[in-house]
Length: 315
Image (spheres, one colour):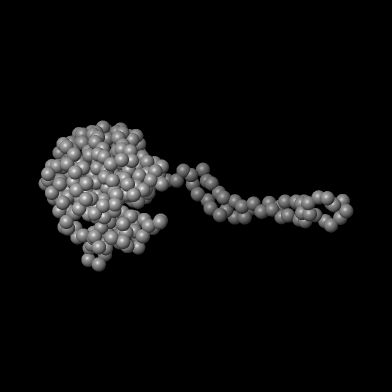
């Protein structure tokens, strides 16, 4: 079937100046001439399907069927750095027997504390990263430590670091999409350029940060690299509550993947950290208070679903 787009043009004549037209509108349509111009666009429908090259998923690790997740949602309030660190350390101490632990975006600096970015920036082996590495070892868990303001030469990045249970860095992701709407993030920081999918014994983990959630093509790229679980630390504001939930569910459904979204609360932040399954169902969530979200993720069911209904790769 071919669809063509035409334009129709009308010629309108004014009413003659005559007594018989008094009391009526001064301009009426007395003739319409339809002129068909050449088609502006002709296309076939439906369009030919695009060939999507999926990277073969080669599993180097024996994969677990189910993993336990702990999402730590701290309150970001007015307090000195030592108090903030102690608050998060206290919450992490309440995490037990988790395979995967998450913290939110820029939890130590505070996302809205823009004037402190350059002062509190760290290198990739700085104080916060050392603290997180030790925490991963102590918990014997994979840990995505939220993000830090990373100093890298002359540039600054919003950077997330993933640790294995031995405390080793196994993945570094620099936020690609920097916010410019009522924010100076794009002016102060430099955008990353590379997606990051990390293969582990608890699945292929795709990393993203907050505003990245609004860009489905990023998650599509991670899917082609084999991502099964998207980990998203965030500092999402309370005024945009509906998009937070809608976007988390959309990214899960589009890619038939789990979404683990870790937000902070306090300072007009929304909270509502959540886990969404590949069907777009919110299986676990927190409210607006500080706390820890615990849930299990069934990777075996995910893989069976993808085999039975491979929509995630049919593009």
